[in-house]
Length: 227
Image (cartoon, rainbow, N blue to C red; front, side, top):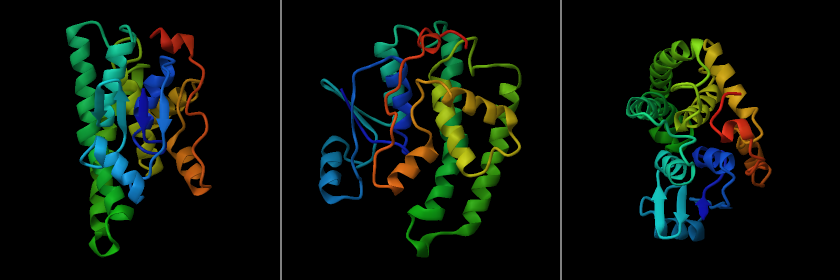
């Protein structure tokens, strides 16, 4: 099994499940901006985006799809709720995180650094931040009296949320969300956690790959139990 991509990108999402389940996986760092790497990426994903998972004959793109695939194929029920209603709630939160939290965060990133400078619109950054804060408030309320997003044990939704909320924290959008901050800190404090976004960026600045791509499995999380 190979995972193409590395921190601080969305590759962190499948790394959660890879680490938690102790899966054997080669993490292949590629640069989408480099010509040779771009050709290798495009051969697997015509959109030329990372991460990409290659598991035998299975080639998957999109970080959430990869994370769900790993949990369903190798998790033995540990990270996917058993009941239909709880599985639906997990998917509800996954879609919410993608559309209501990640979407404005991505808008901010586009207008801060990714678009050519002439195309960036500072007003879009402020509007996206406003939209994101509004929806983070819903998560803040949801986490007021619970450890996990769905039911009484961890699911894929928690690890997708940890990465996405860490991204929001990098944009200083969790300053009024202590429950979200505590949730992110608690999950990343686990030995099975992959690197945080800030750690990944710091390593890129030094020209190295973030350490701790693989960490020891925490039995409590691996079994799906509470901490």
